[in-house]
Length: 349
Image (cartoon, rainbow, N blue to C red):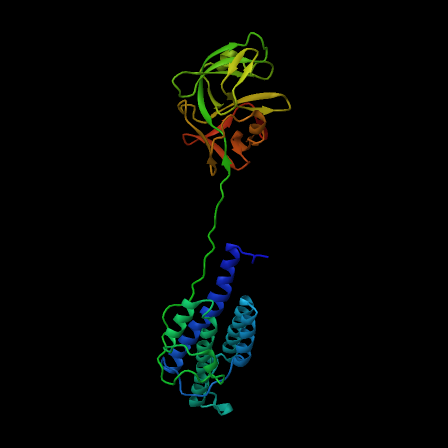
């Protein structure tokens, strides 16, 4: 089975194990050495923060069995143990206390012991991290001004670093990876244009239809069949010269021998039955202006069928503004598309 992988998981592991744990520990170790030891390895005894010999055995056994993750996790556990050691020893809290017989020299030496212990721990851990983060390990050796040795030559009593060796603080080993917020915009798959009705006549074979010529900014007007005749709809005089919204990427249709090259959009109220044209709030918006959905990407689907269009869920909402997916207002030329006559929550058809 393949090792499971995701970019999000990689980022979380980087931040947790490399930035927060290892990187932070290395930075704290060099900073406290700068503060309490003059920036050099102090000449004091050390205390172990993890079992070096056990780590050698565990990582060797893991590598012998091709257990790379086991070897890495064993090393990172030692990093966590050292972090815990530093936090519990808290050299920043070690101070002289005459009431307990702790002189300033005693306190200074205790702080130096902690520094020496953590520095040596970081030096040894860099060896075990080499197979996994060679560049990071090299930076650790550079900060400690001491090169690597064979792992079998490491001293388990935490006395590997030579007293007086200069320690470099520098930049943190690993900065946190900030999660990029990707905003996925919805796709608005329609080509809706502002049109102007230039002629209106009744369909001779269909009593609910008008035949309209509509200027949509093209060289010649488009002929459309519109179901705007009848009760609760429109009279011819009400349509002449009106600004309308026209769906252009609808699959061409023919109604009783008359070709229709698009669809005039209306708000469709159910109770009482009523329809109202859609148009820009400023009716001076010129024919041919594209209608867009705010916050959505327009990617026109050619020859869209009516069922697909109706499934988009365009609605007439508050203030009779028309919205896509209930949040993306339709606009043309910077002006909102609104319906007339119908109530809020009417569908668009």
